[in-house]
Structures are given as structure tokens and as C-alpha cells.
Length: 541
Image (tube, rainbow, N blue to C red; front, side, top):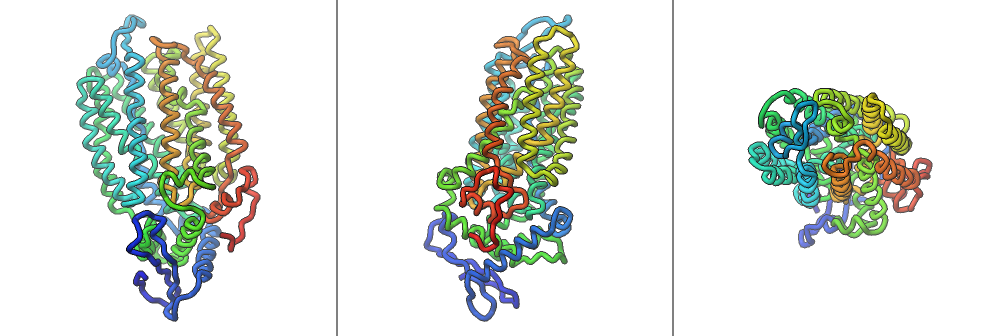
């Protein structure tokens, strides 16, 4: 029995067996409540857990912000680790690492070979695949904080490689190595936000991760536009150098942040979990720390009863298989919708016929549309939840892709402006709907015990589709390869339509549900379209 401070209110204590293995599934031998008069039954924990669930659910958005302001702050801080790698298709970059292609308007045009353009653009994704896999293991063993600290130290060193890369081969290696910590950041931010947020804030704090991606894109777009007229290697090196500004302040923030209380509960460190919750809640608030931890203990115990462990393999067993598929497919939709085409806006605009300056100006407009879309998505999240905006967004993007492809067959010189406007509408729709909502859904759909690994698998599913999409898009767009240009929108329209069908039949609505309720709904095998209307009793486990 772990020693606990005795108070008048029931205090939760975690029983562990030191002889058991280090796997999370073995960390819980029994859970008891000590109230100074003796050991009470599991019913006492359940009562406290129900009390905490009801309290969180009744807070709403404003009440949750007042009760958990520091939870929002620390989630925002950790999410700042998310950034978007800068585009590597600038003219000066192509001149250094590419070869002469043709004369355009009296100016020489340089292009990388399709193979090297593909390799350099996809190198971070290959690194992310490996980084995410190991991050899931490290998070379960050491927690989020130490995992992120190690990643920041690694990133600081790897930036030197890409900055001073003398050849495209060295640049490829540097981009791959940078992808290792980027992968850890991309999965950790979602899991951490989902762990520290109360029910009323969970959707907003997880979707904020998408806003951080957008902010990174705005910074990258601004840097690339400002450096567009710089001559020589510094034109693209400045984009790499800016990344050195972030690791030190972010390392300090991560060091000061509280560890996830869910992680601490899984490790049997209930006193530390209570300290973490007290740091996440406002001083003087009415948040019942013991009851909140009791809710986590109850959910953790329910998941132990329903599953066998916390390994990657366990993500594919029983009802967790369905949850893993939903997480993976939801994140894959971010690529299947056609973002591989519209996401590389600068290159798309150039291939549509715009000059370099107009391309970068339009790209700035695209990124600000993405920013506005993410902010406005919080309104739809409040009134419409997750499922309806997600499905609607997929439909609108499908229509945009069909029109973009159709305009590619016209001979009107102004068609490029119509296509560019549709790209902006596409990106706005993406960041208004599926872009931010993906982080919310993936963070909610997994069980608390498998969250770090389930989110990692979902992100890697996204990365794999992103790599395949990047390969195809490179050959679609590159003038020395298939040279389809905007006509390739028809291919992405087909993949978007197929993903839309899956979303309609398989994507559940989880707005306002506690982690326990979501567990129960999946254990009951409730169909996705009935999630929002199915009631879960407080005593149901």
C-alpha cells in the first residue's frame, strides 16, 4: 500500500506489487480508498469518480477555462512544439541542388530530378515514422516531459546538418534526422492535450494543435517570401536557421510543465497525480482533486478489466482494433482529401502559370485563410461537434477538386486565378473542418492506457499516406515527370470521395463524453451513427 496523507475526505491510494513487471498492465494490483476509519469498497471510488465526471460535464467552456486555466496554458505551451517544415522548392534552392531545365521569360529555370525532389520532401516523413514509434514507448516508460526534452536536444543538433549541407545527399540525411524529434512532437502534443484537458476543453485544446501547424506555415511562408529576392545559399538557409530560435525556450517550458496525471495514475503515483491535477486547476477553484484522480483511477481500472496490456499489439485486439482503425482513418483523411495537391500551394501556383512573387503572395493568403479557418472551427466544434463538420468538409473539398481539375482543360489565361481561388477555398475548408477536428477525434477515440501508442499509430498511418501522396504528387506536378499539373485534382477527387463514404458510415460523434463513457460505447459495439444518441449510465463499467 502506498502511504497517503490522511484527511477528513476520502483519499485514494494505489496498491502495486513491486515483484510485477514494468508493463502498465501489471502496475495495478488493487485500488483502495482510505478515509481514516479503514478501507472502504470500490463503490467509494466509483462515487467520487461519478462526482468528478458530473462536475466536469457541468462546467461548459467558460466554466472549464475558469476551473482549469493552467491546463489550457500548458497544453498551448506543449503544442508549440508543432511546426511545419519549410518548403524546399525555392528557385535558389533548386539552382544549388538541381539542374538547368529550360528558359522561362528569359530566365533560367532549375529543377531537381523527380527522385531527389521526392527524397528531400519526404525525408522528414520517414524520420517521423521512426520517431513516433519510439516516442510511444518512451512516453509510457518515462512520461511526456522527458520524451520531449530528449527530442528538443536532438533537434538542436540536427539543424546544423541541414543548414550546412553541401550536397543534396547530406541535406536528405539531415531532413531525415530532423524528422525523428518532429515525429515525437507531432504525436505527443495531441496525447498531452487530451490528457490534461477536462471534458469541456478537450475539443478546443486538441484542435489548437492544428493552429500551431498553421502558425508554423505562416512563419515559413513569411520567411520564404521575405527571402525570395535574396541571392545565393542564404535564401534558403535562413529558413533552417530560424528553427534554432525555438528549442531553448521550448525546453524551459517543457521542464516547467506538469506531467500528465493519467500517466502518473497508470504508474501508481497517485500523490504525484494529485499534485499534477492541482497545478492544472485554478487556485481556489472548486475542483475536487481527490475525486478527479478517482475518475482517472476508475477509468484506468475499467480499461485494465477490458484489455490485456498497453503494447502496440494491444491496439489491434478486441474493441481497441476498431478504435485504432478510426484514429488511423481519420488522420489519413487529411491526405486522402487531396491536401498533397493543395498543400504545396507555392509549387501548385507556379505550375498553374504564376510567377514567383505572385506564388509566394498567394501562399501567404492561403496560410492566413488556414489560420482563420482553424479559429472559426471552434465555433462549429461548440454547436455541431465533430462528425457533421468533418463529413461536410470532405464533401466541400471534393467539389473544389472536381472544379480545379475541370479548369485545367480550359484555355483561358485567367483559369489559373480561378484555380488559385479554389485552392484557397479548399485550404480554408480543410482548416475549418477536418484539419483541426482530426486532432480532437484521434485524441478522444483511443483508450487512456493506449493513447500514446494509438495516437502514434494514427500519425504514422497519416505519414505513410503522406509519403505515397508525396510520391504521386511529385510525379503529377513535376514538368520533367508526368507533368499533369492541376489535372491531377481528379485523382485526389476519387480518393476524397472514397474517404467521404468511410466517414459517413464509420466516424462516431464523441462530443461531451468522458473517457469512461467512450470506453463503454465501444465495448457495447454501438454503431458510429448512433454514438451521439446512446445514453451511458453513471454506474456502467
